[in-house]
Image (cartoon, rainbow, N blue to C red; front, side):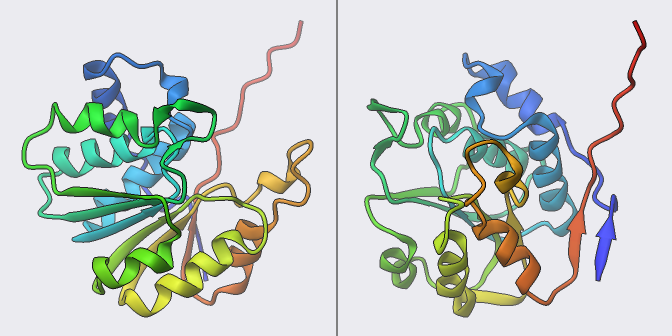
Length: 203
């Protein structure tokens, strides 16, 4: 079943994070709309054990940490990336923005796991995961294999958020099908929010 526009967008965490850390909004590799949807899911379902696959600069990690703090949730949060250095700049550590934000928040319970894929870390992370963000390669088998690896560690009512399900429509990314294949294949209740319509002013 598809539920359209049922998730209340929650913009405040991204805004709060950016107001406290000296980074550009573009350093967060999600749009403001995507971040608000992600935080809306966290606000609605109030997870206790979260897993993020694909970290890059750690901008989205930082938004999630701010969201968890703003909601005053008791949580355990794990982020995993196969690369220990940023894929766009090997002079920076993967997750460096999350490191900056963690210094400003009280009671952070977050672990960053770098240098291996998710199967390597799952025995240490353990089960009981009730919220997953999948945002890795986007090319097959990518997120499909990530999901299969994580599935035995999820609770029965876990929420799995898949980013970039339409990225294969972008120029030069027409083979980036992993997210859309996963989203289309899994049987579950699915939440989608559409972008608000853009007003076109004739000239």
